Amino acid sequence: MEPAALDRVRETNPTLPVVALVDDPTQPVAAHPLVDSIATDPDGVETQVEWLSTRTDADPVRTSPSSAPSRIERLGSGATRLATVRDVDTAYRTTVAVADEVFPEYDVVIGVSEDGWIEPVAVSADVALDECQRVRAGRGSAGTVIERGEPIVTPRRGDESNGHHITVPVDDDTVLQISTDDPGGFADEDGRLVELLASHLEETLDRIRTDDELRAERDRLLALFENVPDPAVAYDDIDGEPRFRRVNSAFEETFGYDPESIVGESIDEYMVPDEVESRSEAEELNAKLRRGENVRREVTRETADGERHFILHVIPIHLDAENVSGYAIYTDVTARREREATLRRQNERLEQFSSIVSHDLRNPLSVAEGYVDLARETSDLDHLERVDEALTRMDRLVEDLLSLAREGEVVGDIESVSLDSLAREAWASVDTSDARLLVEDDVELDANPTRARELLENLFRNSVEHGRSRDGDAVSRDDENSAEFSNHSTSSRTKSDDSVEHGSTSSRAEPGDSVEHGRSRDSDTVSRDDEHSAEGSNHTTAAESDAVLTVRVGGTTLRDGDTEGFYVEDDGHGLPEDADRIFETGFTTDEDGTGLGLAIVERIAEAHGWTIRATTGEDGGARFEFGTG
Image (cartoon, rainbow, N blue to C red; front, side):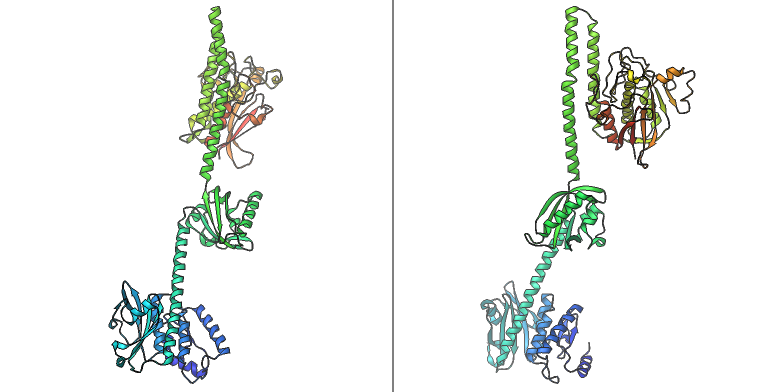
């Protein structure tokens, strides 16, 4: 603003207070006699106007509109300008500018002690800074004032005829000095005004240094907040609900929310799962935080990858007091929880293995030892056949245990495989006697071929054993009540003349088996097209066809209508009464069963990420449905 413009303002309203908005408090307009106050930002203008208005009501800024401001008025205006300063260098220059207004006939210099020297840092407009000499600390008037901390008046250049200096301390390291060439020295009020100006500068420097420390501390906290490796949230409690004020980069990466879009939004609405228990827990935590209590608890929260488990540590700003703000840090412990769950499963499996080994292996071992002793005593080698049976059972039990242990691992390489091909290969490796396989339709599965085939083998053995009577004959639905019931678990185990080993990955047949292993696909499996065209096949009569166990395999859509998968279904006896236990390791209703077959099936399915469900089929047999995605 030009001085002429200020003059026109005064002509319009001589008593109107004037506030100048400036970028630099040392600009000439800031020191203009007609300017009552300055501001360096728009918000400051309003503050200064309110201050001047209040002052004008009680004590006019100028008692005489036509007169220039008094020195005390200029000093008061200068103090207002210092209140807007934000850095030390500007504070020095603004103080000198104010001093030039209050003491226009004197020279002004500000000196700062540094490294044993007092360096001039700001001087009057008509004095060159490089003409001012620095002095050693402890020497001269400036050095003396810094040492004593008291103002002094001294002759200029050691001779009163050259004038005088007034030097006053500002703080421990800074002095303010005014100088005059007048041998008569200073007026009485000059010393008081210089000390008052020095006190305003001291207050300004203290404020700036405090602000700098606060900013530095804030920057350190922000850097710590941003660089914390765990997701962190700064929150404000508004209307009894925590809301986002700031989040760090780890939070954005973990939870997937844009920081700017969630500021002011409810934390609970974005992060807490929509469950009654989780919502109730969140309300309890919020109440604790408002009371000023620290919170450390394991919680479940919604993230970009679904629900995950965290250790939530929330720190309110004020402990043991009512709070409206604080910080929350989320440490992801999902992997740890999964490792703990895996370890629990492994321990449970070890306990199961221990039980099976200690009980199921001991029985056939005792039988074998007994018959060996009997053979020795009687020299009857027929007893060794029973020994062979016992050893065979032990061998297959060990094979099942090894298979079950292997299914607890990952499935290995995955590839696209045909359900039809897997089913036929698995069927060919199992002693199925006169049972038949019907592949109703083919689907492609993403699976490990070896493991998937093993899954089908165990299901086929289960179906064949379940559809057989104890003498090895096939059982139809009409006579199933007259047959000895066999547990629909791969835990059932046949004796030496049974037609199949139940619940084992072995394809080894017992003596008396009625099926030829390795038969061609044409002789033991049928498709939907040739299901009814059994002429010339092994199933030549209706009666025989009714007595033959049929195992069906095909693709399906599960009950939810969205999940695709496949099924294996037979027309045998169906599920046992306690069907909810059929996947338990060691569960069997057959005294000779291992109780491992369906447990193996479940483990293989879980390792592939599939779901498994056992239900009753259309013909009353057992149906196993697998959801593959």
